Length: 209
Image (tube, rainbow, N blue to C red; front, side, top):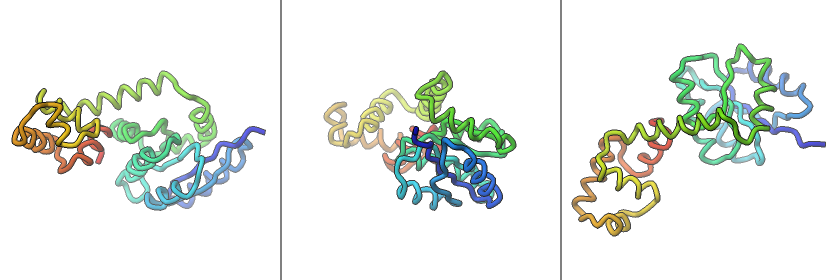
């Protein structure tokens, strides 16, 4: 027998938790292996469980602060699982943020009956035209973060992105300590960050923090 699709649900509404448990529980080819109600619980659960195929994540886990999107961002850093966002909102900018965080799909809660279908679709496909578009969209949003950098600053960023130390960047670019220091300062200022870790995070996520 083919192994069931392992699903984790991160949702703060008890009523929706019960709806999802019942919905997924009726499907023979999938199993709900864990539930969480907050971002912290979701991340902890992801560390405790292995071989999670699908995360179902509510976009708003507390109030309307979009913390589900940042949960997806953290999950995507550590897992190769696919992430499907659950939402009652259809605003374009919110959906874009979800995709930038690494979501492979989203579904409106009013279409709850389609969730098993969406889970199967995301589990079975390795690649699709939609994913190719999403990949290009993420690339363009990342590139957008660098639009104000000069050519010299972009060159320095290229080496930062590769993980080079300042010493190694100096050797590669033949720049003086003062010039390199100025480039770092300008890059951080233009992207409103204070260190390379936050810089790379902001560029990779297209502006999400």
